[in-house]
Image (cartoon, rainbow, N blue to C red):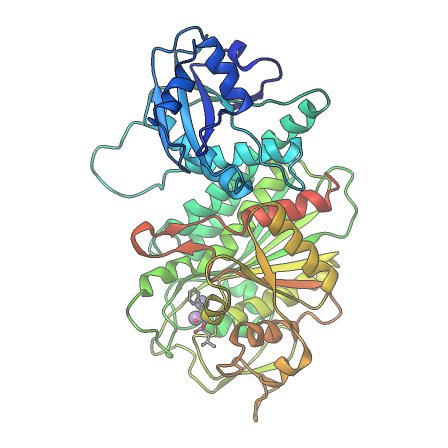
Length: 497
Ligand code: BES
Ligand code: MN
Ligand code: ZN
């Protein structure tokens, strides 16, 4: 996909199709008026007749346009002008791409009025357009054997209007937006795969394959013997019931002129979570193939920083295994020793994410990180608390939490901070070990974070619980690619871009 900006008159832009927004009040936008003028008043007439009410997401393709270089005009409903915000703008762009993808149009000039709001500068304007175009063109790599539909013809999107000094910023935004959409697609492709394909071994191979084009990106993989050497007793307890071997994946990105201390991203990579001996109910269990979404987001983020050559150092750590029942599986009440030396009584084998993460978080210490962020589909309790709109953000450092929440806002991939005060940690008391791996029903998302907090003392650390946001179930089942946009914005800002 090629992206460009247009700066002068829309009617002079060379594209097969002009994409124009219409509000439901029926008043033409500045761009629509310009096109209308060139096209002999056809647009105004059409709207006045009520043939295009401008409802949000609605589209109408006009062919054989007269008086324009473009032979087609695509109208996009923007809904109410008063309520036109960044979400509505995103929705309008996505509807445009979906409509274009059904045609053989190869190039389109977008002239959708920008909403006015904070942060909506030229950079974000470009970034949103490229990101939405990329996301709307995403097709799941399914394993259906029938005839594949023709891929969309769209190759070039020209966004505008952009004026003066904004051109450079908008172009940079387009580049970043395209990279964010590609990274989100990396996450979605990995997460959508079934667990019999996407095993820990497969994930490690993919991390290596995706790093290959980038000399700045180095990947090393620990097998079970290597994991044992690191004394990751909690991680080993989770994997011991599975015939599928575990992998610990280390991705290291060195940026140009980067400050030494890296950002470390830690991903939960449970390729399938049956619950283990504390077996889950059958309904929706298939969705537990998405329990490696955090690790897929880490791989995605590392490909993004390498693609954009950001001037920061980033390390990605992934603890990947299955959580299975079986004669060798860890049992409720078993006590194991983590890599940190702390002992853990495993009261519920379904609270396995925190067990693989705690050893990965301990491993992160050797990098003397500037900050650590872990990403995990960790608790059903977080879904109950926040639904599927916000990820849960918990941290031992308020400034870091605020930074992530702000990144979520700017990227429309929101997170909400939950409190992580010491009382929650007290719920993890065990009679037999340093701690239990569960803290009871109350505040389940936070007690999970409190558990991780026992392994990150003295480090600047934040935890993103993406159990509710990383995928959708039901008829539109699939990975959402979240929180890759949030992580991307966080890293871009850390790099001072
Ligand atoms: N992977 C699940 C969390 C999850 C639940 C993700 C729903 C997405 C949707 C996690 O491993 C888990 O099973 N957590 C338990 C923890 C409990 C046993 C303390 C849960 O949330 O029920
Ligand atoms: Mn579980
Ligand atoms: Zn899990």
